[in-house]
Image (tube, rainbow, N blue to C red; front, side, top):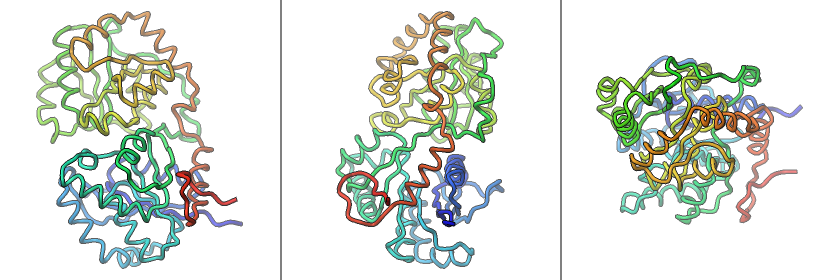
Length: 393
């Protein structure tokens, strides 16, 4: 009987729930997984991992130093922890890729190295000398990488191809909702549960880091008082929005309900809203325009109507499927006009369109988990110029 694939998963932030969703996906596909990485908070967590120390969000000098200081001793650290030589190394983020490259060199070049490129920081695609240096380092590391996992095709088109990065095969793994043994399929689709059904509720969920979004939604509710209710849940990035709590407290139409449990709270939080806000200007012209975030899939699964911005990957996806509301520009006038013209009967029809979509657009099932692990199992180390993953058999 064939032994299960053993994956060493290198993480940039052990406190990021997405790390553990990916580990879950690997395990459901039949692999065993060891997790090693940096943490942002020294707290007890429900998952077992080998911590390489604490890094600070946004402090790139400190994060680079933490990586550099770990590199010489990393093989010894891994050995002392009792972890065995893996079959595949998967590295999430650039700093994890540097660790993966060190371990690949230590254990031998026959171990496939996979790079998860799921967010592209503005530093990576800028034109400054610093950005060019970062891309040069990334390109050098990509030459020893066997596969790049991306969550949006726009990452390949607008970054890897546009900046002429090394031609490494890519694999699209979207940020779909990972089913928990079919439980979500068995749950009834929720109906809107807000206290004031005559008001339009807009949900903004996840990592809340776009100051433009906060100001825009604040301005919308002030321009049309009593017509909208903004429901916010997740983790606000106070380094980007230092006035977040003050803004919320000063506006009765803005409601912040704090963090939520994933995936347990998804049905209830999306049941609170008619629309889900999909516009992000944190890195306009870059990552914000290219990504397909978790809340696209989560919201659509539970019947929330997505609001996107024309010219982004999100808008292209909505237009291809034929759902949601796409704004032509980011002006307050355009937003206010579009939202004030929406009637309750139209909202019900738009929600029906969302809920009528095949669930495979929004959820990852067991077969996709197995297919991912099979792809990783079949990676080979032969010259490949096709731009596609090389498979055995």
